[in-house]
Length: 536
Image (cartoon, rainbow, N blue to C red):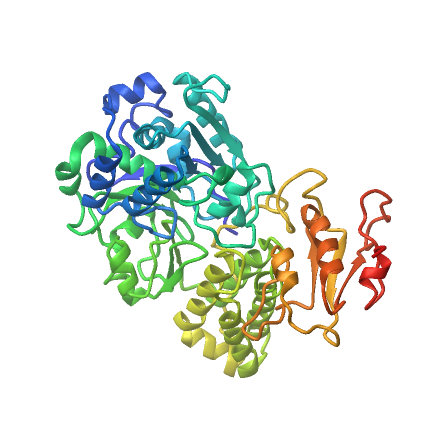
């Protein structure tokens, strides 16, 4: 079985290092060593930074790939229009078991990330900088880096800077989750899509991007767009950080110029000469087969053209001796467990998809295959965050990539290969299920809210009041019949029950495995008697 990756695995570089400069000298570049290796950095104006980002075609390195110059201009325009100071947020929440590139950067080159973030903060007049992390090692390294620069969260500081530590969970890496936690809430998506560039931390326009993105900006600001463009492809210049694991002899984080053949990267890590498949982009990514690997180069565009994804920069080959559907099932089950439990497509859909894939492996036949395809289709674009979409993309890619193996399971007696467990997952207990977070507010749910379909008329007030639980389908009705109520949303659940015009909602206490609590419980209601039971 593949062991969980360490926070800082082996680091390699192809060509001249940029982000990893100095890694051959010390384990961690403190501020004096950082300045010796990279040199000083001059301030730049906001439009200068935007133009620089546009000339080097800098896109977010966290997975979404949004153009950084557009984000910069959007935040600046919103701040000027509203007359408020923007906020800068570095997202260093790397919570996929197969991703370590940002963790390596924060642990070994934290000042390169801070360079880019502080450039943006000074250019836009920001007075608040927050770095979001999820690991103890990254928290220690970044807090030490802030101290080395004399930055603190004191009220009299010209720039208030601090580290926000959240639980290691897939959903905490979403931009909306990080912003919500900075504002004092739980580190889960709020259930509504609001642009951080317009309204982020404290309602202020917020420039939020991935840790590697800020580090790339710092490199470009030092050497200029011309020298930056001399490395890599013309349309995607610079280098890329990749985490290579799975069926490899040496799991590693590797810095490579764009345009390097993917096959070469796999050879450096000791991957099988002819892999059965390669998962590109991480667990929200896509599979490509061995023949396609020979065509692919390391670039966002190239990987998209061959059916893969750069995503969060994770590359995971598997060998010929393991069952690819069984490997994918382990990941699908983990993705289902990572649900925040807020919306039907995620809370109900992802476990159903995992069960469907398990049915295929257990001889469920064509009906099981069709069920998986239908569930994956249904969860897309209906969740409170991108987790259902990314998980559905992974499942659809699995079905499409391994047609021979799929046929053996659907039409025959299986492929006959064991599941080696080569795709890394967190160790048992490191990534608990349920709503992430700690403390009473974010503990296990104690209540369920249920919809009585004989009464529901599709007014939609429940989704307005309680978006953490309810989303409306295309027909205007809630997409879930019942769901657990997150602790932080208990008061809103009561309000939803009270205000339902059709009296179609009720709340029941879940007493399984625990003694009923007498403090703070929601009232237990009878069907159709919501208002009366609550004293209305």
